Image (cartoon, rainbow, N blue to C red; front, side, top):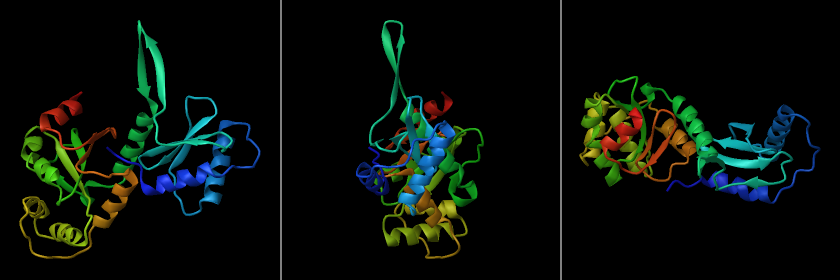
Length: 246
């Protein structure tokens, strides 16, 4: 299960202990501006993407990459670790819409769109159907996923890899694959637990680590659909492709 990043947890703890003392702004834009200034002043080294109003009166959401926390309009209270859901009656039953996941998906989509295909390990060339996958060469289920690559390509699905490197030697191996004459073949060898020649060059592997950290990934493989929808763990290609087509 995906967990919030350590930075979000740290910020949450501090925010719960902190009460803002400034006056309440009158309009939505003024409230957002006031909250942004307060956050910037209190946490000058912490980067958040944006703050915006929710459907609930006086509740705003703060976007940290793919994570969402909620704050009251006066900055006195926050809510973290739960989902804001809209409840609507439909016939004789009720329908729940997870508004937190809707916002988080948009945040993940925007983050993933920041990194171009030229900075990723990419298999396939479809522009219509694609998935972004956080993988790890030391993860057995990631290696299992990689064996399915021919199925995805045959089905017209492009696979875009961001590679999580937890260990120094793993990072060196991934960099070597990137710097090889045929990076996809070299990366496939690594997924098959084969050795490749050591190499070094300008590479985007650290950039990938930063995106992965912003996404809050804690397990692999983690799969993202084009709209930012999150799928945790290994799934059979048929299941992923059906989600893409629906």
